[in-house]
Length: 335
Image (cartoon, rainbow, N blue to C red; front, side, top):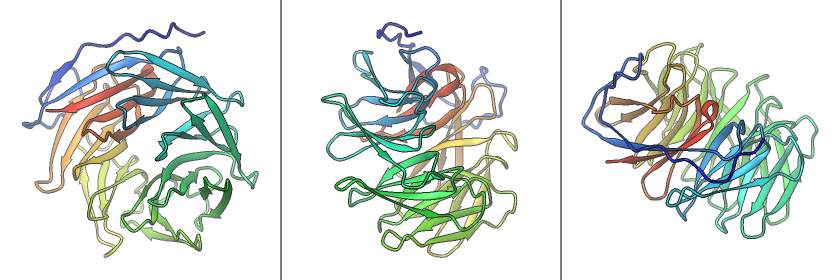
């Protein structure tokens, strides 16, 4: 069942620290944010990942409805694009320099590309049937697309110019490669959600190197990177925010404000400030962490979040969030 394409925009919520809306522990501070939310057009679409594009639009993957959606925050208009292959389970989302929208078909074993101008979708099938669930995509500085394959336990490389796909298996069994980031030197790093490791892959040889985090219970789920090439990870199982420096091997961790059951999940960096969401509390929270002062500040997400699985820093300094369980996308402005 599909709703009309008119979106209902929630009121702007001005939030400045603790709120009585949340039962989770709140960290107060002086930063103010406003959060606007829009319901996606198709009921039950389950928006998994968000994408902020240079034109100010918010894209999302509708995983359960096998579609991509585009929201115009200025007008509230939405347009949706169905995948060519039904039940593809679009998951991760990224744009290339030409404005094409790429996604991982998590249920159907391919990488998809959408040309928004024509609506044309192109599918790049996996050369190995074991790579059945492409997960998180990211472009490097040369325009090469890298992606994790979670249950397939692989990292993939796709060259858009030729369509060639190469795969490398992660050395640790059941590592569950998850979130990805690319360093300033063009090296992809990824979280191994099935173990206490961060991985990297050589862009040329596809050799994978694994870094062991000091706590055996760590389970890094998503990663972000600051300008010093330090990797920040959301330790979903232990309720920690972590920083790993690949150059020195040093690791430092901070307990998330909502504690051991906070389940930090979606994470991004904007101007070297770390932002993430606590998904284990109701409502989910938006968390800000300043690495210089080592101070946290948190805000409840107005609709509850329904598990914010991913977020992204927009080119204009704002943040975009996908709120899977409540069928919304959100735009965060930092005051």
